[in-house]
Image (cartoon, rainbow, N blue to C red):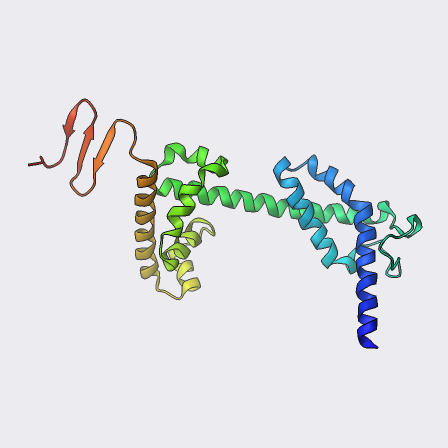
Length: 222
């Protein structure tokens, strides 16, 4: 008996959501088109509808006893004027979350690219997903703990002392591992991107050769 009642409740809840989605999906899509980047619209709309599904009981103007059939009659659809303002608020919050996530993603890419010593290409890397493959590959080659510390520093913008609280290490150990991780990342990215045109660096000897001008500074090679 309880199982049948639970199944009925689930069907009724799904029907209520489908009736709500029928009314609000298109207005929410237009709302987001006017405010979000085109490539964000579908994802934010999906997030919004997911929140509406999870909080179906909180939607004002949506009667609990509305329809139990998948295709409800027109009279069973909720009043748009009653439900849309609240749904717009949900969409606004989901869009704000998406924008924060995008800003943090770009901040991560810019900070890691700057760390790798390729600041001249930071803007392009931050704007184009096609350019991220070298960065992701370099991060994947780090040890798990080094990668976690580096991402906590770059993505969450935590200080070594805060990272120590997350990882259980001492602040000094975090600082050392962070320094090593940044150096490793920089070296791996430099191998992927190559030296700057006209310059060759011999690491460990202090020799930098500039094409066409000979050797400047450092020990002479024998």
